[in-house]
Length: 311
Image (cartoon, rainbow, N blue to C red; front, side, top):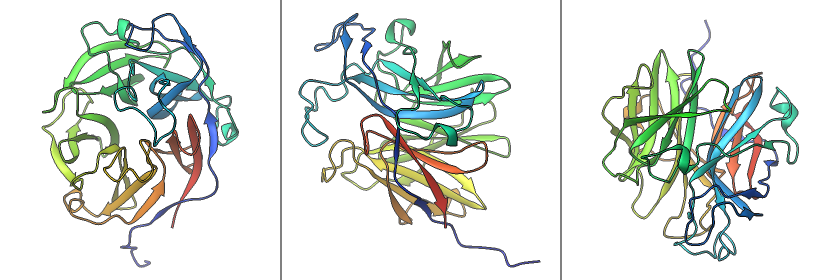
């Protein structure tokens, strides 16, 4: 019997990003916002937190989107009042081939109609952020933010029906960015709340435990898009910076920090093992077991992806 590897592996980006999704012009579904009018076509759209899932024969991508504000010059030149204006619908794009590797070329994902605009979610906040989707017992369950965290269901990834609140966290309309990991029949949902990354557990994705903080974020840092993975006996936690006080890389900062620990309780207080270039990252395996990381708004407008290796 060989020696057991007790050391974590370090994820590394293998090559150059490929800009697989480029937003196209679209009609804003509304309702009206101060700068955008329902029914009007806008040429330039900005995506942010998103998810990628393989289902119904293809790869599907869903995420935040809104028309680009006229006062957005660059990631470092923008207005805080408009940078998230009218994030009231999700973009939906689908791969041209069933295999992800076959879809790794410029502009490959085809943009479909927006899903879950505000008028299809009566009684909810207009905002819809950072969806995560899981296929459970033949149904696709989407959990999205901001708090209260809500659920929508679909049978085909095309048509979605809201199903109400799954849980509330302390900061209504602020806590956000859910992501899901499954291990031994338990679902671990991580999200952002006051001061760090929090975790809730569930056996059915409908009833959740109380939230507990598993990683404290440094003062002055606004984190985004946490991801939790369990690989070869180690927990890996990722998050990126959104708009830390230093503003080194602007509003769509591409510093994604990675932490590793043998136990969840050991993540808090640990130091990052590496920093990857990705904003609002998604981390996933394709059908062959190859790892990829995808990034929104960096290095290109839209979503880009690249192979990830573990060393």
